Length: 158
Image 1 (cartoon, rainbow, N blue to C red):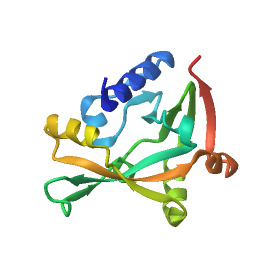
Image 2: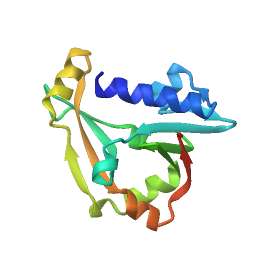
Image 3: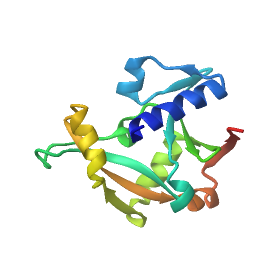
Image 4: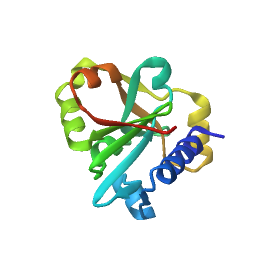
């Protein structure tokens, strides 16, 4: 199972577990809204690597492998969700999307940016026919977000 499929499976499991209402395909693709809980729109991110690294990865831009100057802002900038539900292991961290975005943008200089260089993932994106096959992300320490009080609540998938 590829990384994209793993993320989609995790989203589906979370939606079922918490009895959320799935979003429309349009909202998912264009607004980064995966589900709804009442009137709150939710963007779900699976961040299993954070269990090992302690860092959450926020995708900032997408890059065309054929023309690296052809770039577009990614979900971090374009998401219309009210909340981010971030899955790390069996814990779901819930953030107010606007508060988290503002904090990261104000403090972006503090964290390391990273570019997707995993050739298998790049090849997977090419095979899927995606124009943008690489990405640039910023790594943000989960502990720092906890200390700043930015986590609204923690939920369990158990």
